[in-house]
Image 1 (cartoon, helix red, strand yellow):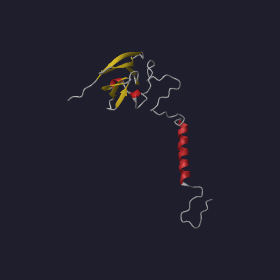
Image 2: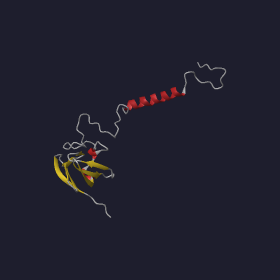
Image 3: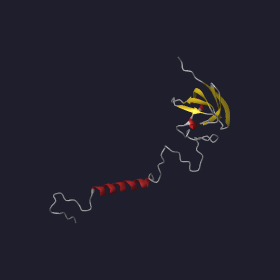
Image 4: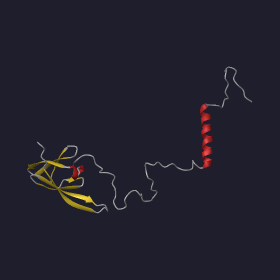
Length: 155
């Protein structure tokens, strides 16, 4: 039996609230999905591969990928292929090479200074020699010498 309060014009049951109705409808929809088995499966996002102890089929088993250079600024982040020699200065401790990267930022390199994929072997009056370390397609490392000459600006 339903009893309403005499002061209100539109009487509602005491246990009714909009939030309770929403919860009841969600619960009913959830139980319908549970019967079909759709809610038992976990949704895996496509952005990350879940290996579960297996090898990732999209990565090479021979060459290990590091996911990028891992550095942003400094001499150790200079790639030999993007370096251009701007000048050489003769100091008390030997030659100092003035190089610039692709962003036209200047750096000073001395002999045996490490760069991203090698190191400086020697500096002469008009060139710099790098020992570059590379990997072939099978992941085998090899080294080569790269000589960079002073690039004169076009007049």
